Image (cartoon, rainbow, N blue to C red; front, side, top):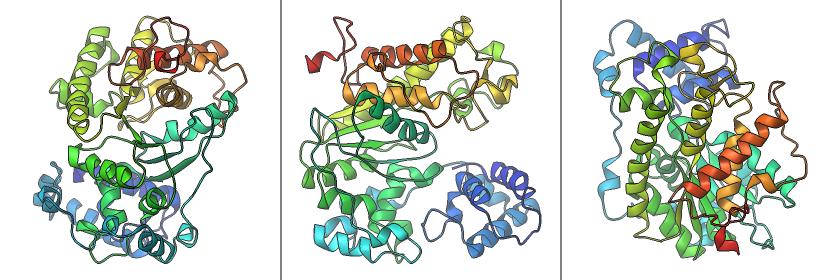
Length: 413
């Protein structure tokens, strides 16, 4: 959750694009406001109505007038519902109901949810180790989710995928659990159990999450539910990458570094050590529930890409952080830390390599990516594939090793 002052700044930037102060919020504006201020989505449907948009505008205006300074201070620290500290979820939680009851709740969902009229997705059991996957996630997961199916197509199979995502906090594991169950901040609001109905009424092999203000219980609730209905599932948690906010936190900086000269290979080693300690501890706790919890090492892949840029080994790339160096062709596109165009491939390759234990370097068929920036050469794509496999096989929590270096995980041979 961003500081309210940052939210105001973002709002002022985007609202200038739509002109009139009472304009109907368009999709682009709604996504931007929700990214910085997920609380604006009071009914939890993942978008802003005119009423919700106006309420958010009033809050922004009060803040500009200095009337919300205590609230701004309160937003500097994430606060979760005290219900998370209890041993059991409320008795009306959707996850406590039968699969048939969960499906009925989903099918009779809130007005405006076109998906609520359909059954939960169900895919025939795939052959050759292909996994049917459910997942939550936010904008840092979007590049991988979008490119993974394109990569698997080139590898010779379709990727069965059912996702319930959102921007920022609204895509987090804990937010989706509350939203799907109709509990805590969603008490009294129609739940949208998209994944709960899918998991309980169909067969799945894996679940994926994006990290956000992690607490083990935010994940063990999903693990327990999946194990109840699909025993033996695998679980994968992305460890994201060193966005500007993480850099400031790790190095105790009030502002971003003044120039990219701050970033050295040693700096990225320190950032990686911090991430590995945190996620290592989290996975250790989660493995008390099931030993089939793994890391999607996007952090290792992106820091390796950054190191190669520093060494001059990333052709076509001009900078690290656009917000710091000002270069259009940077690895990270904005102050939040979203990836620049083209790097969605690298995250997708990491997803593919971890999930299926095979190097993307072995894919010989052309991959039909939806976005292909002009600077992204075949040489750079080859480097991305190499980086992804290196990141996966060298990460101790990916579940993949390659001792004979043939591009196929040892567990598959």
